[in-house]
Length: 147
Image (cartoon, rainbow, N blue to C red):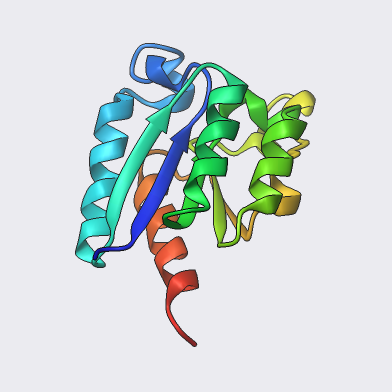
């Protein structure tokens, strides 16, 4: 049985390619999902992707992942800054978590500088645009390798 990596995409990421392309690029979420899936497959993992504009849906996905996912890559979108329920769900997940952002929140508006996800993430990939999806999967795979 192939191990699974769960890729979570938060609110408004379904608008990638249309919303603020000067910040987020012109690739659609499906393009990013495909890049992540190719990277996961290359390393022998299956990728499952969930996108929701609702915090509770993402929390439910993290809870369910405890039963089958080896690790999680999460691009929480705006939930990054205030979603304590997502923070708590990820903290309870027994596996590595990589937080992902297309842009670098530290180079943007001050309200974006605080992440409630980072304290429970194993690592963060930010500011690499679409390459971040590949980099996040590679980082997660590295964390999953036996040492």
